[in-house]
Image (cartoon, rainbow, N blue to C red; front, side, top):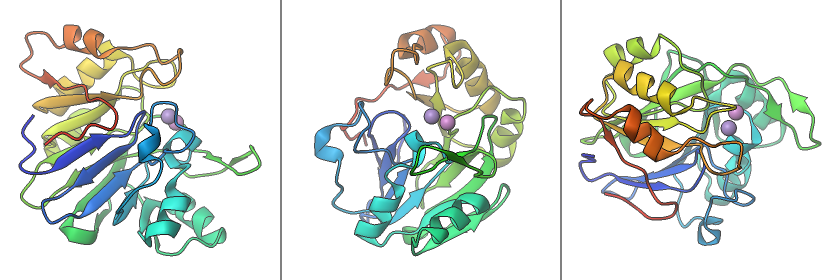
Length: 237
Ligand code: NI
Ligand code: MN
């Protein structure tokens, strides 16, 4: 996996932290405290400059508010999630929609793309609040790779278009099954995207998320696409 100086740390489940050579630190789908796959040492963060959110389910957004509050970092999310967070008094929220691109701190850009899933926000009282539709993000790092975080999604044909138009180098793909793609579907996604490497995510957190990186690797055998499973909390450069 060629990261061109960008450090990636999987924080378990769908949460990833990216750090550029100048220290700019970006977190996507933050779920730290309460995430069984997140090391306890990562429940608080030293530095966060920007937060990206794919959809409103708790396992993708539960730590967005506390991190934004602690670090003064903007949250980038779909319009309905942005309005919801603003209604809760969160400052610095940037709402957009699919097709839009934001330029974040350190020149990191994020383009919001489609995902096939559901998008309700897990509200504080346990009820679901309408949260628009779910998204994925293509993040581009200055001088570094383009990384596609698929969010939670089923397999869909327009992944080929995401590959064609945004040319991601690396895809972070859910493989657990049940709520998201399973490994054979994720393998098909990787082929459509034309990426050189896949980092599997959204597996193993709960028993129902049964897909494994080994199954993904088997499904991509001979494709030339690298499967690069990460260990939660261990940075990779
Ligand atoms: Ni979800
Ligand atoms: Mn999820």
